[in-house]
Image (tube, rainbow over all chains, first blue to last red):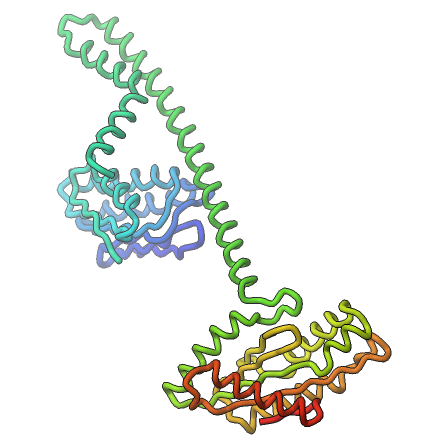
Length: 124
Length: 250
């Protein structure tokens, strides 16, 4: 399976999903004109990935995202939650700038109804 | 946010969804009733499906409103940072000539002077003054005086190197920093500026107009601070003025 690499732009995050290591990262800003159009290939890739793989570590390092993107992030987390319930070894790390209290709270909000390992981590 | 504020916020949000919470409470009660008929269950299911459609439509609408509000916020932030950049640029620029202003030059020279002292690098500063500028203003006009200042600024910019820094220091005074430049080289550059000004086609502005420039240089970084170094250059400018003007002294 091929890795998924999408370079970031002003309005879309950079995506590096390494199929070899199972390390997946979404970082930057996310307010695309069409969130669905941007996130659909990611959702497709993930559903392929979990068909054959048992492990994944997903990191979010986002500075800003809009409401549509937050819905897409919830969809991604749903995929991970499902993998977790099937006994796959998954984890999610939510990185936020230590000064960005709002991003921290957003991470906590996302984690609230999930049972998979979800860490909110601050960085300088 | 304090715990109290947080729990109040949660409560506020619950209040907003009061109707929906009641719907779900009602359905739970219906389901808890073991004697319920199939028809009643069907009716409840229809009611819930309708409620679900309604909520979904609301969620989509809220998302759209959220996105457009965020979009607006981002645009405002962009405008704000563009305005800030413009202000920053204006704060260090002389309005008439577009050169750096005195405040910017003082700050920059201080940094370059300290750096030159620390690493024992060459540095030359030049201070110059348009000869008989007051007479130009009086004889022709202040408009022509302004034209002269703008033209001198342009000549400075085209005569010096990109690493050099030129500023309008006062009325008709211009200061030039030649970083990592020894006196001989700076003197040649200053001489070029002086020549370019002398030979500029001033008759474009006024048929009888003639403009020359006197320049004083200092390349001694052993002064206690950049201000003293600039004063030393100013003394050389004074010499140039008293020695007949239209010349470079160091």
